[in-house]
Amino acid sequence: MKNLKKWATMIGAVTMLVSIFSFAAPMPKVAAAVTNGSDPIATGCARDAVTIDDDWISSAQVDLRYSPSCRSAWAKLTLGGDPGIREGTARITRNDGVTYSCSARKSLGQTSCYTKQVNDAGYTARATANVLIVIDGGGRYYPLGTHWY
Image 1: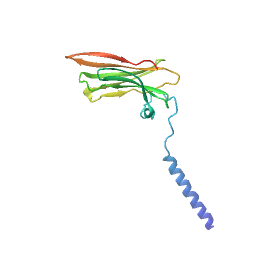
Image 2: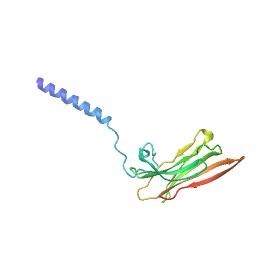
Image 3: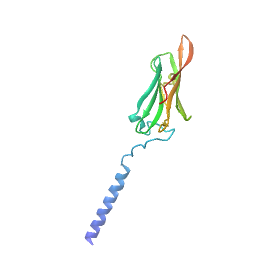
Image 4: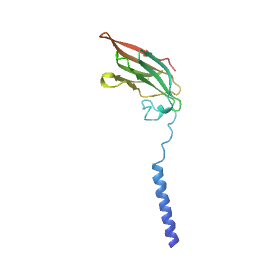
């Protein structure tokens, strides 16, 4: 009877430890070809992202970002330090028309933004932006754009 209680106690302790460590286990890696509209930072796709192409004017830049592990793409807009650059909107567009955008305004303390990501497996995508630059009191929007990749 003593041995039976000992074994039951040990089995209970092992079961409890296994259940505790199963909750603390790391999340599995992100599967390739993520869902359209997901966040590249929240999914972990930004960790291995590279800039495939970019376009810029003054200190404003739009980047086409790509994650090889997630097979996803998104646009990143950086407004830069030029005081004439006031705001901008970036857009990621996939060749089948799926698109997401983001905006940044220096007057709100925003100097950059990034779009949601598109599944890029078997598709091409490009990043575009429109940036407002004010010179001598007059403002004009300037278009920026990367190539299709």
